[in-house]
Length: 534
Image (cartoon, rainbow, N blue to C red; front, side, top):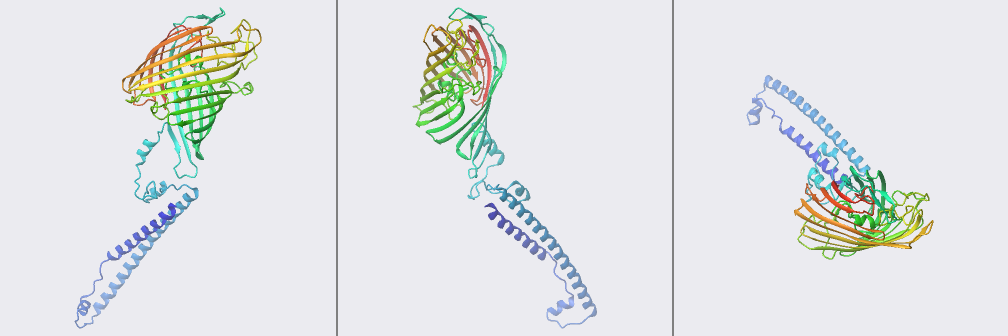
């Protein structure tokens, strides 16, 4: 304990100080001046009694006695002050030890009182403590802002880290056509946009507590575009590098864009095809890890394709299953950390890296609403003509599908080299086993499609130009898009950028308020946005 080491040293220092004061005071006194007769007597001369000499000696002795008493009084006062200081320091040490705050370095009050500072590792006298300001500057940012982290030898291990994802976007779809026609000939309205929104804002608090294997996180997700707020929590246990089990909210891992990649895509938003085919977000339990070097997996069981806004009493009893496996045989596809699965080659390593993966999802989906309306609570599924699968009239006039089986398989791949990045994905989706309130003209549907993006840094870690496209080949019609844009990283980090993009879309089969896509959209769409993701 620090108390056992520091207290004897402190007493020794005070005793040494007291001795030095006493010695200094003694040696500092002037020697007694004797009368000339006494000096001669000491030298061997015969004494010569003299009344004046005796009287002078008596007066000298009185003066000397007074000086000694004054010296003793001063020494007594100094000793009292030192003992009081020792007593105060002892009480402070006792209070700190009682609170369990000793961490190998004297507390601030003791340092202020003049006690010598100890190394960070008191067990290693050769350790040199880093300057406090430099340590705070270097250590506070650790793939996020570390709000608090206990020392390695703390009784309760604890880490609290703060992360943010914020997207501010300008979107303009005014050039689009006003209406579109679905496969049944029904004319439907296209929702046009011209707005500036804080499209996404995520605040994440996470870390470990009680044990470094016990992981937790709390996320507040907001979208001004959809006027929605979701508060999500996760609790996990990391057994080892190969296995971590977590429960809570997450993205269903049925597409590469839902496996720790947001918002590090070629474009900030997911492509048209990806938004159409992919699952979304729900509550569940999942296992993930790295089975062997470079081979990663995630296996998930959850409530449904998208249940963020669905209350528990509406969610059916059918559970979703999903999983993804990907292989990085030539080393990590990107640098470790928050951006470890990013599509771009920001770090421009002169080494080829590839990623090959596949994902599969199966879910028995429910409409979540018995109301006869065109806007069901389940908005996770669209038909390829842009109409919600569970909307009345989606397959036949005045007929509503209440249940459907969703199956989706995706294969993805990527390549990076020296600032060049190529990423693509192919999708297949089946809808079947319909339950409806009337006859349907078919028993299943099949849609497939792909996405592809190419990006190249023309100025290393500063400016990237990219082109991308996607296509949906569907049961009720085909759709496509192509786009080009830039990313400007105006600070030396991959966590902040400004992007501009111009895309051309034709018969968009999907609509989502926090995406740039609206069902039936055909036209030119410009976007400018800034992303902060630390």
